[in-house]
Image (tube, rainbow, N blue to C red; front, side, top):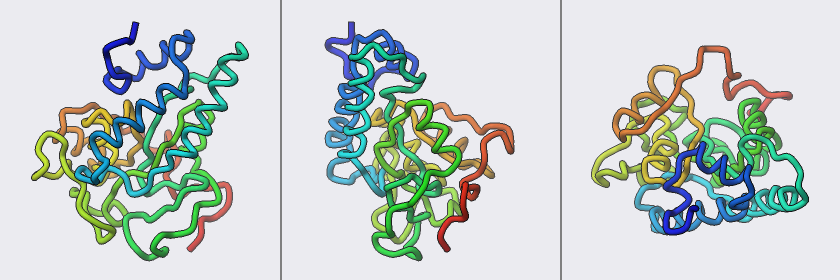
Length: 218
């Protein structure tokens, strides 16, 4: 059914059906994602990611694949690779918030933010942290951590901001979906510049990145 078409060229709901029906494994989906990372951002030309955790994503996918093989029911987003904007904490991954205040590189986070925890509970597999300007403060995804994030439709242009890394990765079909934050257009602006679809949820529906089970490091 999926032969001849790269898995990352499929929509989220198509991937979900393929995984839930057992036609593909979570491991195959994550491997396809990592292949697309190497193909389209391997040299850092898009600068979508500030941190990539291929080994961790593959380990998580292998666990889900074993559950799939055992006939267990999988959560709704099982096998779906995502990127998390680097304003939210992901356990085991560094969080830069788009600047150098926390070290170069900063230590791994000790917990997930509430929103990321919910995504992982639903089965989503975090492959890395996506690029953002410092504290998400502007509509262009550039910072002092390295080269700016680029628009996959034209590498001389910006994808906007501040969720530019996430949106650029989706537009380049590196990821089928990605996490972002939006206070004044930080999802909607980049989506309008890349021809992608993004949603700003109702304020308060999803806890902001500053809400944790315990206070974040300062």
